[in-house]
Amino acid sequence: MTTWLQPEPANWWHCVDDAIEEDVGSGDVTSGCIDPDLLAEYSIEAQADGIVCGVGIAEYLLSPYPSDPDECRFTVSKGDGGGVQRGDPIVSGVLPARRALMAERVALNFMMMLSGVATLTAQYVARTEGTKAEILDTRKTTPGLRALQKYAVRCGGGRNHRMGLFDGALVKDNHIAAAGSIRAAVKAVKSYLPHTLNVEVECRNMGEVKEAIEAGAEIVLLDNMDPFEMREAVRNFQGQALFEASGGISLDTVKGVAQTGVDFISIGALTHSAPSLAMHMEFS
Image (cartoon, rainbow, N blue to C red; front, top):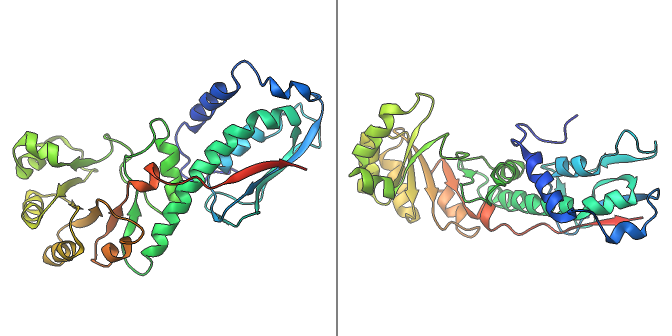
């Protein structure tokens, strides 16, 4: 059974392999002091409360090889998307001590970072409970880690915005400036866009909202508007488009934004500012 929630992030193992190469290089010089046949019983434990993400990476790095002794094992106590409290075991096992130490830092780096994203996302989702608003991520991700960070958002109960420039049309202020108007930009995009993709337009005021909807935008991004303007936009154009709020939204303000009636709230901080969830590996 896979330890990943579906859909599994694309090509994640390339990132992990690169990280191992970066950290281990030509070999772990410190662990040469350990008998190569020594087996270690280990456990990765949470050092803070949060949401787990990245167990599949731990499995990839810490699973026994077919040639390992029979007593070697890898056990999952908390899967991706599950809640943990300080001291809870997440994964544990028995492995040659040298190999466990070689993989320790890379496994922890990924799990702590991804669990931090999942934990922050879950906090935003909890603040919007009772509203229809769904929490979205953005493209403000660490280069090379987008698929994994967006997977972590899903583990925290959020949803993914577009994965990249290829799977969704978002007409922003610079597109509008270059095309000449919202109407011209939307018309041009719709002339070549597949029918399976929607057009979203970033709007800063009610005049732009009206122009975007009249131009045929299916989604309107309310950029840095105050909640009163957001509520007015939703009320005036209800049923004509979906509404997304974005720009400077924090844990303190997200509930008020959700209560305006918007369908989505996109938050770049989920992936660019989430603090890591503390974990450690201990030998017993």
